[in-house]
Image (cartoon, rainbow, N blue to C red; front, side, top):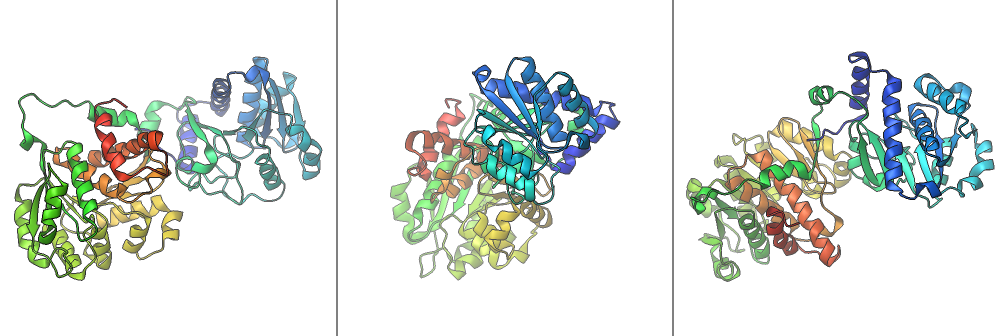
Length: 517
């Protein structure tokens, strides 16, 4: 699985490649520039008809730009470099590559000041493609003055912008613009993707991201302790290809208990149950307030129902506790929360169940609201507890605000998972999976059309369906989160983002599991 680095982690990899493996830095820069030039040529097939402007800074990002210019020049492509500093100020590998380009008679225009930039602003409008080589991943201060003026102007030109390593001005660790940032249509990054490429708001700045191998030894990449990963299809396919044995029966694929539903929220219970069956669970039983049982008997065909004692509000009562414990005896996993309601007695039932049950629990929706009342019951003795909050639910769990959650989704998720010994799925764009060991997995599927009621209930059901079949918790989360987003992506192709609903996602599950899409 591809690791995702912070700026510091990537710098450490570069340092070890140079010092431990004796790979000269200029070789890494050469590989980066050559790879970026190749991506540019492949992205724009008619590139020989295009004029390219490379806007280069004084550091290694500018040095990469010089290498790109050389390779494009060698292919007879029209390219000009605008250098935002005096060439005399260049150092190290950047200076080396500037000197090579200069000896090749490359077209380099120094524009070290805002006054100089004013003279060439109109010239930039004549170019078809812009390459951003101003700042790299090491930027850690707000962009001001001359550089801010340049970046803001580039964003007005309505030309494709190719960012070298990361759009200039974007924080590589958080994806936040440091005052301002280039809005690229393509980002060519080196070695490993950076967190800022994959999380909001960075997603809105990077365009399509291509990762280039610059020659850092594979063993070094594998050994470096980087706990963040990108969740992609190639990892999921391994699980999907597992066949069922001919001599098999429903009991081999597990029995899931779903504790869900209240007046007006029977749909959540139904969707979670149906999603679990579509993912391959052998049996699903829905525990429901007894007065709602006739409705669910009509609504669901393949799902078994268990009517249980209820409160005057037609939600599950504390008197249902012993029945639920009995129901769990032959189950492999239990879902608690979809559409369960927020009546106080029902919330007390949820908390009592969290303390008592020892099988894997997927806690969602109203189950999370109940937990937020008494988050101090975590960590529990059950080391198989899975929480699936959206940002609002996460904010309630940690006694914070949605704004603060969104500002540090990875950090807060990781801290919560480790300190409370739970697996956590923080839904959003992108959805994150964090583990008690501190690992984080960034999902690569999903779209804004999934911001619709019930999609979270479907995800919860998918997770339960996988755990029931014997997949370990982490594998179940990875498969469910990726396929949930993929089903949404496929659904959008047919109905569009505005019309996508949760049951559209359920309908796409069979085709995904059989590899038809």
